[in-house]
Amino acid sequence: MSTGVRIALVMNLLPFLFSPALIRSDPNMVPLRTFKIRENVTYDCINIYKQPGLEHPLLQNHKIQMKPSFARHELKNQTDNTKTYKNKMGCPHGTVPILRNSKEYITNAQLFAEKYVYPLSGDSPGTHIAGVKSQNGPYHGVEASFSIHNINIERDQASYAQLYVGSGLNNKVNFIQAGWMINPSLFGDGDVWSYGFWKGENGKGCYNTACPGFVQVSQEVPIAQPLDQPHEHLLHYSIHQDKQTGNWWITKLILNAPNIDVGYWPKELFNLIGTGANMVGVGGAVQASHQGSSPPMGNGKFPTGDRKESAMFANIEVLNSNYEQRRIDSFPMEKLLDSPKCYGIRTDKVKLLDFTFNYGGPGGNSCGV
Image (cartoon, rainbow, N blue to C red):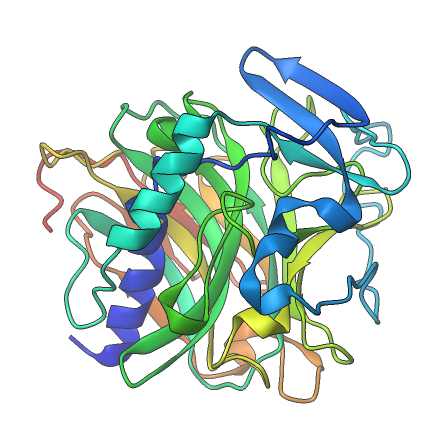
């Protein structure tokens, strides 16, 4: 197996190794406001300068960047204009929403981080992928629109769709990924959640704000939240490196509404992607149960090429070494599919103006390892 494929598999495996590690707010900090959006899902509005992410030792002298130095384009007039995005939360000025969690989950996050072993030289048992990637960096970002699907996932399985950037050198990797996930062992339910994950210098990193590192900036949209908007069938994310600061931002682009810069992973966390990432990619991935049964990917159906019948990624673009936005297929691109018995990918539906592919499958008991 080539090093590039190994890195891609590693990127898809790492989040599951941290499955019990949930995001939190400091239980000793009194929030200015609290939002309970459902049972066991509560967000605290925490002073932006006292949020958990800034407790990372590499961020002792970090100055918060309130917004990117350049704005992403907005999505306009692609569907019915009457469909609007309504935020569930709106923290007061100077505070940000942090998902509340118990001391038990905080402890689990620390234990899993300490025991974590990075399997760069090996395969990722039980992990299967379907997507595309390019290793012709340096790149400064990737963005895509991808469909959201609420499928049935068993307690010890996970299924997600993600975009990522990363670099590897001498068996070490820096990477960032974000998207949506169904992971009952992580979030405690079978719902679709947005998420972000990072791995940085000295092999450290984790989900969302489970441990210090990610800096939440948006007062309205946390990095991890249930995706149950009435008309939210597509997620459009951008992961991009700020040209002035080197920080890696995650921006949520919303149809017919202003973009939301959720937050960023500070440049101080990384030692291999300070001047850009060697690899970018997008796609779906799953993690099988301990018994070997693989869950559905995408919408649980093999791709037909029909956007209405298949899970899809569209508008896949990258920022090149000059911060110019280009289609991903403008660069040498590799298609990733390691279990054609259970999942598929179709890249034949390529539009004139954007690059689109369909992916997914039902999973099963004979998907391989």
